[in-house]
Length: 247
Image 1 (cartoon, helix red, strand yellow):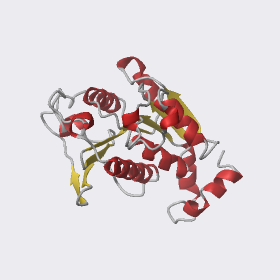
Image 2 (tube, rainbow, N blue to C red):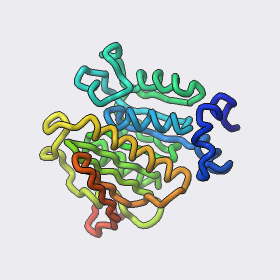
Image 3 (cartoon, rainbow, N blue to C red):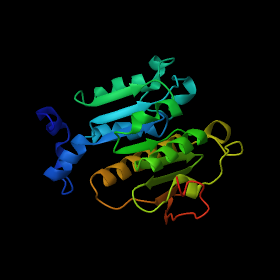
């Protein structure tokens, strides 16, 4: 099965690019993406994945929409206050491509529902919650699942794809601290709305690069300061002291 006539029309300008040969278009059609956390990064991320032809998406988030979300979470409006983010996001995205297959779980990702990730080609973590990120990282490592960690705070972005299929390199290698008590959070130090948006766009591009095997994104930490547009790409290596080395 492939795209409908409507979808080929929607994505026609993209599908004429040289990267979108018949094989890669089929990969895009069949890929399964999970996004955990439907906040400031995930809103543009999900919008651009759908606008790029990704059809099979699963969302996890137990949050309801609040006024403080609207400045950067672009899928939501004042009319959506008090509604579940995942359900509103699904409705909005289906208006871009009604042929998408979107599963929306209005609940947080926990140990009890982690197995719902098993069929994903890529799990994208935009949760802004350290304990959830560590939980996802360990599960992806144990099940050889591709994992993208995407974070934005203040004017700073951190994004990294962990392949989890070759040599051990994981989020815990990069950030071994187990507790988040002293970590800065958006609700305490703030975040630029534009910074969150850029993080979503860069994460979307990394996702497509990985799905279509355009370039090797594995174990490359991308750091972006959106206030002065400095960008660094750092190759991450195994931390011999990582507690998950033998998991």
